[in-house]
Length: 256
Image (tube, rainbow, N blue to C red; front, side, top):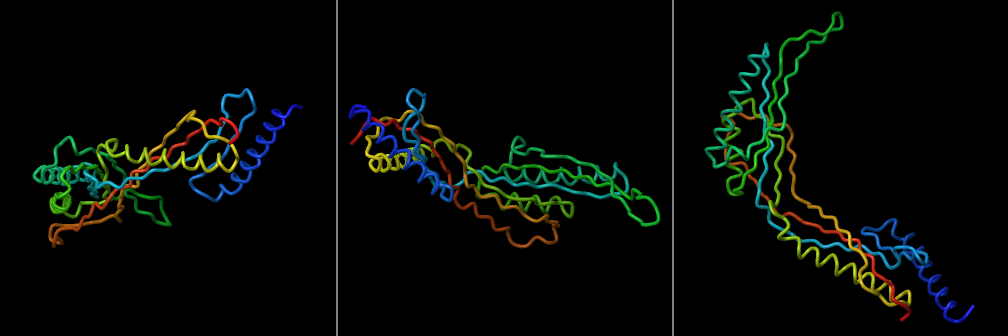
């Protein structure tokens, strides 16, 4: 075996040993950083690392999950009462500036209400109609007004299921998070390459995933009536965290 082959084998053994140690430690760490060295002649050889970038953005869209639920002796009565309550709610939303296209039905359900007795089979004593909508509020300053107006209009049939906030066009804010993620990935790769005694080459491949830590605030099922209305319901959109994760493979060029 000539000196060049021996040196190459020593370097590869050192890198593989480092990879095994890092993978063992990486089980309890997030994000994971790993070194991979494939056999000669395979498609992927190099140092593979993860990097994460974050950016905090103030949401520009509020989303209300609202509904009505009515119980009545007959399907027709329950449906009519639910329709009246939902129509009143949607009119109130429109009056607060919510467009019809920003009100989307999530589900509509009719199911029987049973009376259970130990001495006889269950009997139907009424019917429940549920209608739920997702409401997009584009003016954050009016979220409280839309919520309160909807509750007042729907009366005792109203159900408030939750509030969430989001960024309608996150791509314009993700560029900085992408740069941060790639920079962190390269910094990790440079440390690993230096520790392994090799030179870091160019990026061979980059994979990206994104997610947001947006605020969703589920509410316990709420029943409200116009008489109960007091001050405006406090609503705070806070900030939403947009996160980009990248998985980058860098080539190994040779010994330092």
